[in-house]
Every structure is written in structure tokens, then in C-alpha cells.
Length: 305
Image (cartoon, rainbow, N blue to C red; front, top):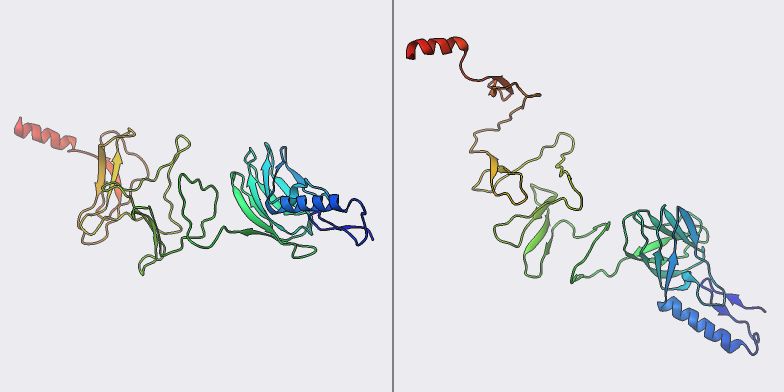
């Protein structure tokens, strides 16, 4: 009976076979097992949109798919697909080190099972498990790196990652106990995001970086409003600072104690030179001529000289 092979290429020798070469084949098998358990291999997927099939090397070492860690490399100019055979069962540490803003998908060669895809700008790592759980539509599962608390030291970069926790009711603080982010759920605010700052007297900064001339938009949904509130002793205030990066002078819009809600509707167009904003007494603002009329000016001149 001839040898058979596992999906990852290990040779299963038949009884009485391979006289004189059994030791060599066994050593090769041990080398394959070693690369499966902890080996590293780089796979170039450079080029335009394409599918790269990782194949098994029966009875010999070197097959990329028979390594624990696989690093995808090369400059890509289109979305990439990397496949493994339907019967491959293994877990992999995948690293996307490609250049180019395109996706890299890891999947079985065919079928409609679950897959894993690096986003177009995700140059990171992922632990996946190739389940071989179905002969036609096997799944690729993504695996976490533990369910307990994770301590991050040094500089950490999180790019295109889905944040499934912390959930509502969780705080993120620095090592000194200073609250940085607070997600809370109260009777008055079901989804409340609170930003804090460790430095006394300085509020958190929402800043657009990496590009020039970037807008920051606050958008409500439907008929929802955007509310700006002060604290229990100070009314809400909007400050517009002067046109320098480190400017300290500003123009402020603030409220005082109100007996009821006040809504002001702005004009739909600019007025002409010399006009002022006036109200109709019902909160609708418009532009109208400022100052006194010509007739009143003449009368004033006659009386006062």
C-alpha cells in the first residue's frame, strides 16, 4: 500500500513501505510538524487584483500554508484573495505587510463559508482558524487574543479595528487613575459619551490631523438637535477663537437665565451695506435699514442746529 498524506503534507507511511528511506521520510515529517507548529513564511501577493492559491507540498517542507505565521508582502494595485484547500485545518497568525490601499481576503478555495478580510488600509495582524468544518463550505473564524484585561505598554496604533468593548457603563483611564473616556447609561442619556482630560483646566481636544483644510462636522439625525450645555452654575457658551493656531482671543456667544425657550430664525440671505438685523417680535430675524430716517434727521437738525 502506498503512502497517504495529511491536508498539510505530512506523509503517512504504510506498513512495510519505504525500506531504507523510512528514517529520511520521518525526519521530513518532523520538519513539517515543526513549521506547522511555529514556522514563519512570507508570501508575495504583489500585483493587480488576483487570487493567490496556497497549495500543500505532500511529503516535503516549504509549503507556505503549512506554516504557523504567514506574512503577505508586495505592492498591490488591486484587491487580493489568498486561498487554501478545502480540507486544510489549522490556525494562522496572518500579517498584512503589503503596500497599497486594497483589501486582502483569506478564504477557502471555494464555497460560501465565512472568510477574513484585511481592510484597504489595515496593515495589521489577525489570528484566524481554518476549521475545515464542511466539505463544501468550510469557515474561516477570527480569534481574539484572550478574554481578560489587556495592558498596553508603549505606543500602540489601532487602525481600522472594530471596538466591541468597552460597552456602556465602562471607563477608560490612564495608569494614574485619570478618566479619559467614559461610556455611561443613565435614565436621561441612554448613550452618553464623556471625554475627560488629565490636565486640570484643559478640556479634551477634537482635532482633524493628517490632511489640510479638513472640516469637523456635528450632524444630528432627522429632526434631532445639537445641544450645547453649560454646567450647573454656568450657562452654555460657544467661543470662536482668532485665526491663529495658538490664539487666545475669542468672540463668545452665550446665554443668560431664560424664562422659556428662545428660538431665533436667521435671514436666508445677507443684507446690504448699513443694514442691521432686526426681529419681528416672534423670533424671525431679518435685515432692515439702521438708524433714523432722512425726515427725522432734518427735524433733528432744525431743533438742535
